[in-house]
Image 1 (tube, rainbow, N blue to C red):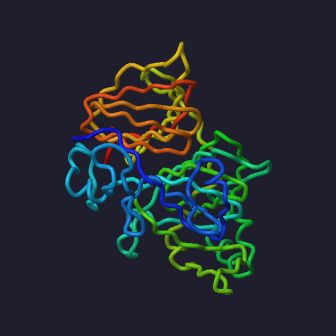
Image 2: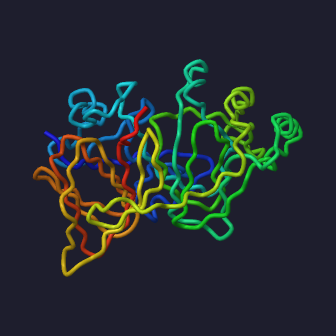
Amino acid sequence: MSYPLLFEAIVKERLWGGRLLERLYGKIIPFPGPAGESWEISDRPEGVSTIRNGPWQGQSLRWAMQHYSKELLGGFPSQSGRFPWLMKILDAKENLSLQVHPPAGLALRMGGEPKTEMWWVARADPGALLYAGLKTGTTRQDFIDRIHDGSVEQCFHQLPVCAGDALFVPSGRVHALGKGLVIFEIQQNSDTTYRVFDWQRIGPNGKPRELHVEPSLACINFDDFEPSLISPRRSPDRGFECQTLVCDPLFRISICDVEPGDGLARARPIALDKPSIAALVEGDLIIEGDGEKASLFPGDFCLLPASLSQARWETQGGARFLLIEASDNQT
């Protein structure tokens, strides 16, 4: 048994967040404070997604992985036994901390998990920035000196962005979201983050938030200078327009457009043997597979299990979505 799966959002309170997740995507925010993250597909101890459609409605993704991991993943590996990806939408009303995630070679020794991710910008205020990598010529000692004098943000490369831009953030790349951004975040199933600078921000307890300077210095790639935004590349024909954003052993990510036709536009069926996720950015989308339909609205993420024999994509007025697939070049 498998079919296109939709999930209940898990909204997380964050000091730097706002309330746009509610206004833009209809997420239910069950607290009065700032909502920074909506975990859309999660198999984490800190938040496990609940299935909201079809025969498995009310069951958790953890349950599905325990009982139907082969149907969900096919031959795609999951070293931890958990679903291998974590899907989020982030609302950055304020700057996030300047931070880094541990590379795979260091994560286990440091008691954490590696985390490579991609950001797709859904909304950007004028002048919004991403911080990623180092300014050319920055040395490790320069970085340490500026940590001590409180000006380390000057070491970071800044990228002006607008809606539709995307950035790849491999483990070891120092980075931060600037204020005024809403992004879709596609990442490894990890929540290990080391903060190196937090803008002298005061936490809810009235004290500065904890920094992780020594772990950060151990993880930062000090040869990672001034990375560029992603330049999309046209993808092989799928029956609708797709451009590849990322092709990595962890995932292949594309941005896809389905145009409306007369009434209901239909893309031809797609054979599947590995898991895929469609994250609707704009428009409307119905995904049908093995006798079940999932209706998506902007901000919805739909998991297509590997065991689906085929899937058909339908839209009434056109759709734009991120397509996340298991990569063919796994290592």
